[in-house]
Length: 471
Image (cartoon, rainbow, N blue to C red; front, side, top):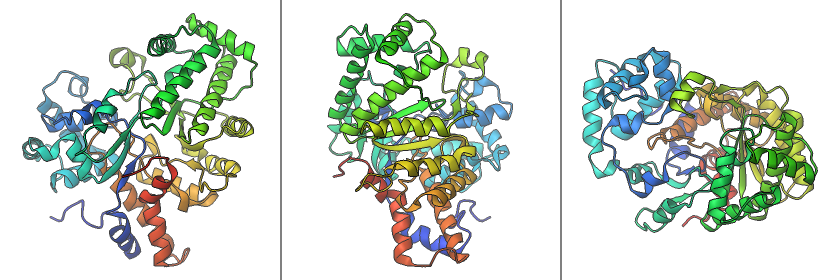
């Protein structure tokens, strides 16, 4: 039986085959957004078994397991690792049509050279084969990163983190991969969530200051931006359920902040005012330091109250939001930043594909800064759009409304050290799409142009866009 994951997997025309194997396949990876553990990288963790590597913390797989009716004990519970793997092997055949099926077999092929399809019949064989390989030094975290041809990793970090694991990695001269922090201040913006007051207390502790006013609060956050900058950070990230915009006066911000500091819930309008002002403040800080700002929006999170109480956040109970108004607040927020000369390089990730054309057209309103091609980016297919149709939709909308050639490409957005196969998945989809355009006569079969297009989207554009010097 022929291998399911073969050389020309998803490459359905000859031009796609040529583009992928000549230009895309061997390009390095610039992983500018992920959720990998800096601790695991610093300590060069080795995994005891394939369940630890593959199923630990992966809420994509957890959702698939639950949809197949698997008991939570075998997902996030205390079941034996082999029993959890058996549950996944039982589930995989039912994921046909879902990217999980492709990702699973790409990862088995790329990292373990396994062609067998994972199912109950092959479970034992694959369990043993993977676990035997995992005992080797070539399967430590750092070795997997290097095997994946990764040049830069930007983790996701709380502003109050001391970043000591990043410092530890920096001292490891034999590793050779840049691992830098990303500034993620979500808890500091979400004034109506229970995490706000603990965040302020943690910020007071790391800055050694009492933060009794809004002005003191933003000054402290600015100090943490500088701290991260000194540690090599050049990217921020913001996870927003909705794009906020509401104008405010300084006195209002003081009032809103004091209410939040007391643990009081503020009105929706006051919440928007607080978030808007703080985002503009941060955007100005980022612009001054030549950072890139990422905005992920459109998720409605922790929807299953019973499971949230049991497992906490990031456990696989999130979905796409249907925010009613996007265009007006997004344009207003970017415009407010622009008016204050506070609009940094920005990547906007949209979770609801209904808004793809809206995002594609909006970013073109704020590209007017000479010397920075594609200053405002429409980010790659994110989360529930991290699929073949989702990637094609995003690439097509960007090409329709903007300049695809300046796109900074794929990111991993994962906690798994073998999810770098998603870059291969993206590159195959990209080459197939461009190949279809060429063979339909919609763009010329100009090899120099096509080589530049593919190589730039795979790596070179990100290398130019982010202010991170590579060795």
